[in-house]
Every structure is written in C-alpha cells, then in structure tokens.
Length: 206
Image 1 (cartoon, helix red, strand yellow):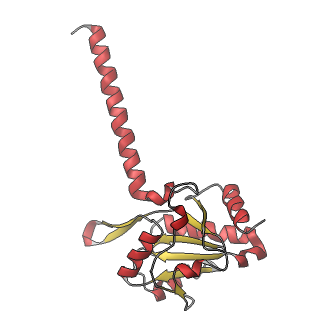
Image 2 (cartoon, one colour):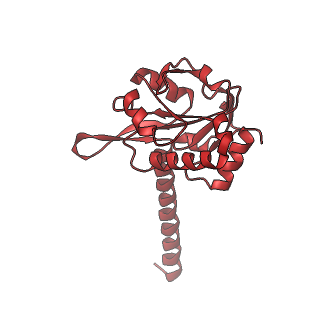
Image 3 (cartoon, helix red, strand yellow):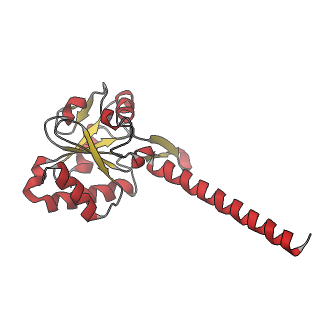
C-alpha cells in the first residue's frame, strides 16, 4: 500500500469514528433529556400539548386535568423526587425566577408532575416541593400519569440501576401555557436566566 493510500484510509477511518461519536452523543442526549427538549412553538402538534383525558391529584387538594391549564398562565415540569440533579436544579431555577418576578409571580402557576407515581404519592410530593413557594406537586395512578406523559409529549422511562433499583430518564424542559391553556413555549434545562425571564415576562404579558 502506498503512503497516499494509507493516509486516505486513515482519513476515512477518522471520519467514521467522528461520525460514530456524534451519533452516540445524540443518542445520549435524547435518552437523558427526551424529545420534549426539542419541541418548538412552531412545531406541528404543539397546539395539542396538554390535551387529554388524564385526571391527576395535586398537592393543594385540587384535580389536575387539561382544564387546569385554563384561567392563568402555567409552567409545567415533569420529574421525580429521587432525581439526583435535573429536578432539584430546575426547582432551584424556578425559585429564582419567582423571586425575580416579585408580585407578578402570583399570576404564574407552577406544576411539578411526577413521572414516578409508584414512589411519589401526593404526600411525598407535597414535602418535596414545599421549599419552593408556589409550586404545586401532581401525582396519580401509573395509568393516569401515562396519559399525562402522552398528552404533554414528554419522554419518560425507567432506567434500571445496580442493586435492582431504578431511576427515571425524562424530559427536562419547563413547558409554558398561556391563560387559555395553549402551549406558549418552553424553557430549556439550565437556560440562561435572562432568556428564561424574557419568556416568563412575555407569558405574563409584560
């Protein structure tokens, strides 16, 4: 084999390895954050987000259904109480957003919907979200949670861990809905504060 052929072969091998690496990274991102992280307000079907026949229980004693999204702007986040990083980080961000909104925070409802109903009954959720004022936890039967996951186009699945336990892979974006219950955009995981606040101010009309 000539030197030129060898160099050409190495280049092809290098391109192949880079391609495989990119595919692997894309797959990891999808599994960790889910397709909802890619939802945009112009994507087909986003007007249907949140529509479904799910009936869940909220930590304030109310029922959470598609009708709940109407009346006041809402932010909806799906997570679970055993989440090691994404969920507590997002709740911390929400606390910061509400502080910056000041009195206007009263016009924004925030719902934390569990994707792990087997370990997150309403009582557990109530304690979990209690440190963030204004956040309402939402749980229900596995069947009803599955309906909500489908209605909001959220990705969620069990991920087995050592020792026979499991964690949950799930979408990490906060979904925003206007006072009519229409999807109004999203805030990505650890999105820059200025951009997050711009989205919230737009949602609240100011």
